[in-house]
Amino acid sequence: MCGFPVGSASIMADLPIPRRPFSVKRVPGFTTLALVTYVVLYAPIIILIVFSFNEGTSLAIWERTSLKWYALAWKNDAVQEAAIRSLVIATIAASVATTIATMAALATTRKKPFRGMTGIYALINQPLMVPEIVTAVALLIFFAMIKVATGYTGIVFLIAAHTAFCTPFAYLPIRARLESMDLSLETAAADLYATPWRAFRRVTLPLLWPGVIAGLMLAFVISLDDVVITEFVKSAGQETLPTYMLGQLRRVVTPEVNAISTALLVAGVVLVTLFFLLNRRRV
Amino acid sequence: MTVIAAQDSPQNIARPAAEIAAEAERRDIRNRWLLSLPAIIVITTCAAGPLLIVLVYSFLTPGDYGNVKWIFSLDAWVNVVLQRDIFDDTLQWADAHLSIFWRSFKLSSMTTILTMIFGIPTAYFIATRTPKRRDLWLFLITIPFWTNLLVRTIAVMEMIRNEGVINNLLMWTGIIDRPIQMMFTDFAIAFGMTYVYLPLMVLPVYASIEKLDFRLVEAGYDLYASRWRCLRRVILPLVKPGIIAGSILVFIPSLGAYVTPRVLGGGKNLMFGNLIELQFGQGRNWPLGSALSITLMIFVMIALIYYVRVSGGERKHHG
Image (tube, rainbow over all chains, first blue to last red; front, side):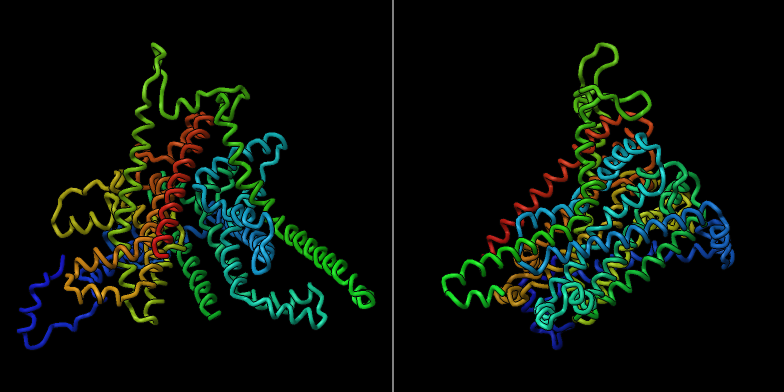
């Protein structure tokens, strides 16, 4: 583990050919540990995916390749309803969060800082600083007050909560993109008598677009994944896909849950890959 | 117009021009506040603001069926660490709570150490690849991070449960004849959290190692340091800021973890997050749940302040 002591250098000198050229970057054991990490990281995911195509319920015996569990999940009304609810919430929350995050990012980057700007920055990032369970409890209490006062228990509460915690995730890539953009192009547009709105639409927005899309996708993924806040905020019967799965886990794990998991995994991986490609193109 | 007017008398140039500039700046700042306003409103009403209500609720009396009665009381805060004896009304340490706090700290620390053991070599491995390969290895670390946390926890569960992959494999090879109970243990929670939070360690450590000047390591070897000594005395001190950042990033969500301990720990091995949830569910003690939430937040703040101080000190060191 500790490598050879310095004394072994004399022994090495006697050998005709060194086994491996000396590299300052090599640390013994690190490569092995890293590869073990990758295997441990991916093995459970791959096994989950593979066994979701197994007709039996066992993780030991491979019965037959089939889409039985996917078909069951697809036909299950509760799953369908939860999936649609998840998508509706994620779409609305991510769109709203990205819009307000873009506006805030435009206001808090590049130009001269103003009094209170750091405050805005801190406030937007606040949901990232507080443990999710605490935000969840806070929203449970706050929304319970409104629910009692108004009698309304609809889906708007979930959308509002998701919008709030998605905003920092949308804000960060947009802000990063903006900071790498020069103000001189907008100044040039203004010099050529473009109105501020026109300059924004024809110059700023096209340049900012990859950041906005990246922010939108991150927000979407974050909303789709959320368990804790949704679990606390939802009213009776407002299951999303993750909370439905969590509820199912209380009983026996069925491969049906694995099938839903695989679908969610694939959706996530596709979005993240797109996000990565978008971010890479800017260089 | 003002420009033309100003040309007549040079004394007038300064005032209107300065006023126009000041006016323009004021308008610009007002516009920027207006642009930020929707985000400010959303986060204040649906994230930051409600935290204040939690603080208020922690000083109230629990209602009979959940929620609260608006009567001031310090009971919730007392109950965080103490409990009143049912018979003689004396105060005692609330062992149940203290053991949950202790488990949360223990498991979060274990998770942090485990992510270090696996994360630092992984980050080092990535940083020493050729730039082209680096992106791919890094991407492979980020993918699981952005996939559903619950799904990844379920994947771990499928590995370690009694009818899971590991036990099946061990029984098939004949090493054991009865499944090893791994689910619903502290080990399961620590392993699951390590699995889930590993990327949070790898990414900042990688950022540190990428900036590492390997000529310094070479100098170490030139001065007859062994591999181990170079690692311990040259590489690790230089990437320490990344390791500290990674530790904080892993420790904080571990402390407040809810999903992983709930799924892998079952009903008995509670952590901080599950204890809070219990007060809003079966416990029906919202003030106590609120007080516990604030306590958790204070712990997180302490960890963050510690981090800011340590990393600030580091920066000063390097000039």
